[in-house]
Length: 229
Image 1: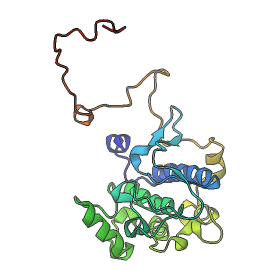
Image 2 (image 1 turned 90 degrees about the vertical axis):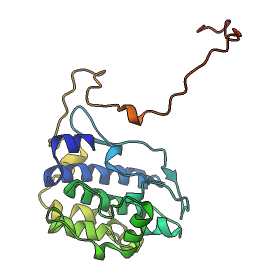
Image 3 (image 1 turned 45 degrees about the vertical axis):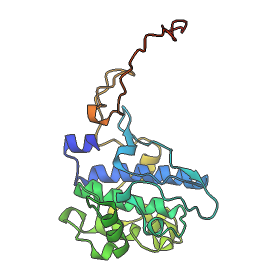
Image 4 (image 1 turned 30 degrees about the vertical axis):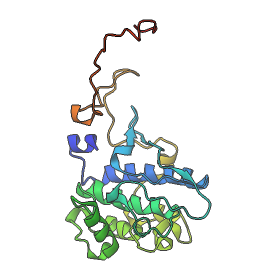
């Protein structure tokens, strides 16, 4: 997300198609193995030195046959069945793809609010109550609505046809799915990476650090035999 903000990429269809298609392939890989990812958000998409997109942080991923009931993830990306605690399947991942597509195009998630309970209320009211900004109109808006269906089985890839329903969607009409799968499609953005150890593209903020506890030596010398003493 820092790259998107820094480079002003929100609203670019070229970038949104590239990164969302990478998520489609990542989800397909997980779902074939009965794994639900459950934590899609821009922060969990990393870009390689060649510009390819990688899905990271499998902390909430789970092997599931049938339904699972754990409420987890990021509130802005919660699907209705997650909020209602009715049990969820891999359909929650396709809901999150709809939220991500909206955010990549508009710069903010669709059900955004300062308070989680207000987010949940908006989600439960449904996509029909949303105001779609100009960048989310047209074919991309049609795709987003097809993913943000309240009924999990009605979400585009959950219907008969599966992944092909997304790949053949009119928003992706000019997109090279085969080249993307083979990692031969030109990336719309390539980070400058000077070496394998170059971490200049990552930033750490002081406020993100965990609380530091200052060590007070009690003078007993209890640690004198420690290897690091």
